[in-house]
Image (cartoon, rainbow, N blue to C red; front, top):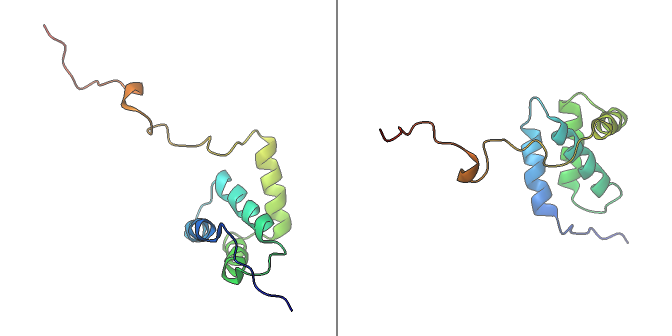
Length: 105
């Protein structure tokens, strides 16, 4: 008898899928995340809601598994690395200059 399993990353993956479901114009990292999640849950017994949503996202984005895999291979071959597209505005205050201050005269 097959018993459904609980995946240890379920809650994190649920949040990621909710984010992907809301995407109208997915970015490279969104395609990579979707492919990664497909790989993680392929053949997994359980997390049926996640697996349904994975297929729903493919349909929303006008893709199938083959086109997703082709697209992500292209993305990786162009040098994509996770986290490289983080907004440049995020960081410590030391890496910005304060142009609003006036110099002492």
